[in-house]
Amino acid sequence: MKTKIIKIGNSKGIRIPKAILEQTELDEVVELEILEDHIIIRPIRKSRQGWNKAFKKMGECKDDQLLVGS
Image (cartoon, rainbow, N blue to C red):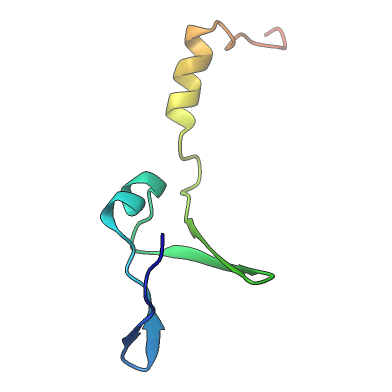
């Protein structure tokens, strides 16, 4: 997908289409990284994000048993 770089005050930016924002779960604050000649934009993940879903899946698969006896 091509897009234009636009002037925003003294800076420049790009507009990210809504569909891409929804698909990538980007929010108002993101992490930027430069890797060679690429700009990488990542969502900032909250600590323990997704743990509830993972624990539920563990319970369904009976993979939540104690490893050490009490």
